[in-house]
Length: 303
Image (cartoon, rainbow, N blue to C red; front, side, top):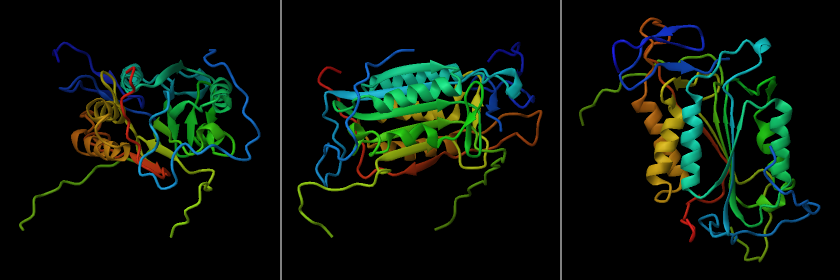
């Protein structure tokens, strides 16, 4: 990076020097699109895959919807700084998901009401011909809350409408949520690693819990900061998009997310030399895994 570039400013007001790999690191501190087909009462759901199948069925006509809620600016009364660099996350994730065959819809700076309207419309839609479903949120957050443009909401508001009893056409299908946001204000200084010296019933139908088949991937663990580079985007989204691009059709999703964790944990470190407290900090993503089979994306005939 040219020496004439000016330092960037973190969202906590700290001035940061540019880093070699581009930009400065920041923390996220404490539209019609579907023709709705109303679902029947949720008394039962069609089996999308055999009872003991190892992999989810990825042979439906469509891959599925992917909704990206990108929040860069917030109402002044919330006293939240703009999330510089989030546009890189949004575009990179959109491209990665399109490459996997998803129908991607991007929404920018929605209010809480607008966001939940989109979520509820998606839950009301008919997903019978789709493999799976994805929601991604790029925003500010604190432990147990996320920020829309005008107010906070609980993360579970994103996935509760898609439980099997509420959205039966997604029952038994993977529903994946990716959240890039802080979960608190703790810092992870890391530790230097030194090399050391040397029962089954064969029924044709089966019952599933209403909250099975979910995956929720957070950019950081509860209580901790999540870092974002102003020129390249957040550490988590950079790693996620790179792994999806490299291995989206090669590895199963849990393996992919394991390598996302590895990339974030090992390859990234904050660069804020003017602020010793924030300098050389680390991060580890956190995955809540309620899937009951492996997610392995296969290429569609038309892809």
